[in-house]
Length: 391
Ligand code: GLA
Figure 1: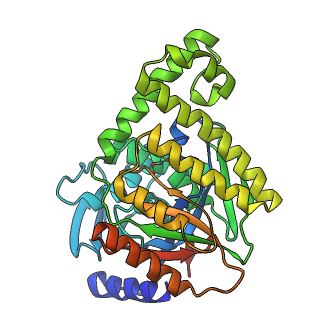
Figure 2: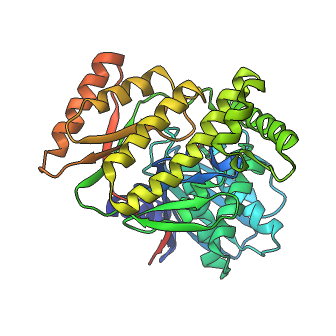
């Protein structure tokens, strides 16, 4: 991390000149359990990882934004007000979207020169976009002296992605990047936005993230289809059970079982996933509090099966990775994480006996390459803290 911070400061000085820029770091995330529940007003349970989006910049007296991306090696410039979505430089829209939202909220932002970089693998389902949004919002809060409550930051970043970037994501990714606390997982009620930091700091319990290397090609269109199938399900239950059913969050497993045969097959499967997944998140939180990691791990396996068979957002490579993980010594649970159709798995290991991390990574990587021909990026991560301004 220190290396990437020095690199981004150097890049800033070279590109824009000037001393003492503001550096902001916002983490990516891995969701332990609670997938495709956030936009159904349900529960999620992510942790922040030790890979981050970085912003380095300064306010200027000019009414323009100059942005440089280290990853794409591109510099772009926009007027501070009245800019449009940039179809040529997709990465810039995450920054512009947040600026637009802050302006829509009535905040007067200064012009700025900003460099952006990222140690989260892009397009791998570890929320590099949400991390960038949260970093940008925090940067402008710092340079413009704004005090915006944490949940509002998550919401404005989500709106930036929904409205300016055009991706209809839920609130989970922005929420964890803003609110994470080291050594904890974050239980979030995505309806009320109440949350709880649950300790995840047993030194023997490790999180392993395996990137399948499959870019999530189908994800946007399929994501939107799943959302509308869930809405169809919620409307059906509101009709049967009354208007207090606003989302699938309000349907119990018992109610679902009573009416499931009346639902079209796809909608039935989507509802079953969301309704049972919500229960798994509630159970997982309790198990983690009790230190019952074995039972917690079982829920991860169950979640994968539900995402694979009922929600149908897994893919061959994710399934292979989970099967490989299941056979490893010390593993207690594994599943796909994030939106699906590629991206990463999350798995939990109990490594009391000090088994070498490198040999685990090497063995999984070798088996996965044999099965798929793909070289994967595999790494352990602890539960990290949320966004911070580095002075
Ligand atoms: C993406 C979205 C999140 C969430 C997950 C699935 O990461 O950005 O809001 O819906 O997919 O759980």
